[in-house]
Length: 303
Image (tube, rainbow, N blue to C red):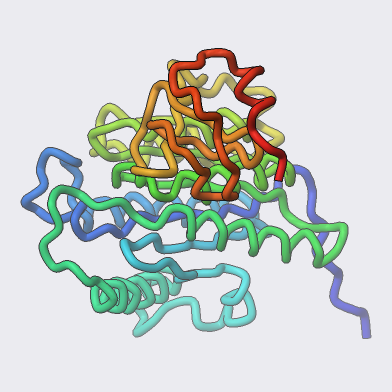
């Protein structure tokens, strides 16, 4: 009896890690200033896009991670459903991708809402993007260690919530980890504002950053820009980053700043002068008005 042939991955086989923003404060109907696309319509575009990825190559793999306000979790993995190809539909009507993803998504949204501590926050709170990036990188590292043959991984962030300055350090660590692993981070921002974090993530890792001008045509943007594999991108002219915001967030008040104070020991950033670094405990120089960076570094004891 002939053995089953093993998977032969080529350069055009992709592992797409999709980070799905499920922030309820973003998708509520009252917040018309954030996005004009309702959540059911948004899911329709996303499901069509995921189906197209799986149809491009039978070895393509899709993993969906839901990004909530208080938690994040895996809600769909196409590799786990390959062994159940006989169950191609549920009740003979809905494709298995849609049924499993929607059911898991509903469970996640209910659980994330249960973990919420404040029922009526002011404005739109940020989603846990740092946690979703960490989950995606952990999954990719597991794929790397599975063997020399594996699909080419990439991360796609479908983000609409504003940046959370309190997540700056965690997000930057995830960006540098992705850069070290040569994993591009693509960003599709569907909110009203640009995301400085995702601009830096796409620029540093060599990904694509895009903010669609017409949210109703989201599927066209996804299929023409983000559906291409890493090999095909060498032959296409994809959108280039323009005006990347490289501003950092201070560690004391978690606000985006243009100028600040940097600890010479741990590189922590502060918007105001402090006598002691809250991160590593190093004592800063006494002269507040001293503008000489070299003198201040010499005065700072190396702990």
